[in-house]
Image 1 (spheres, one colour):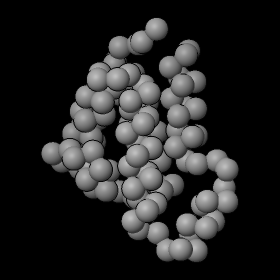
Image 2 (cartoon, helix red, strand yellow; image 1 turned 135 degrees about the horizontal axis):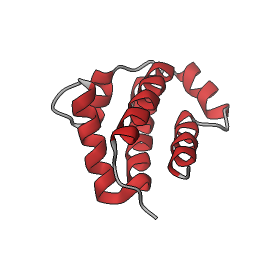
Image 3 (cartoon, helix red, strand yellow; image 1 turned 60 degrees about the horizontal axis):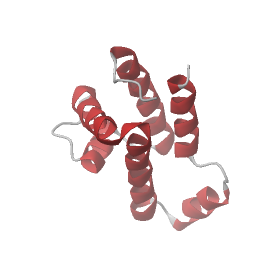
Image 4 (cartoon, helix red, strand yellow; image 1 turned 90 degrees about the horizontal axis):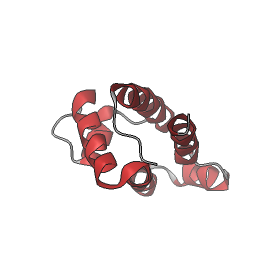
Length: 106
């Protein structure tokens, strides 16, 4: 069962994305580049995320965010940080996915 995009979904996703960016040490501008959004302001970012959601639901949205995170890890981290990250069995996007799925199933 696919839930429709709602204001509650948008609010929740906005909070989750802000936390994710903080943990990743990234900015909304970094996410804007990954999403190819018109602006780094949260409404523009959410608009792009909504497009992804509408084209493939939650799996598509999470897939896009995972791809962005993977690109960040490939391009901008020092080797030492990459080794620490690769030894961690729990990727930040896994936590994000679980939180989204928990909210989605409520």
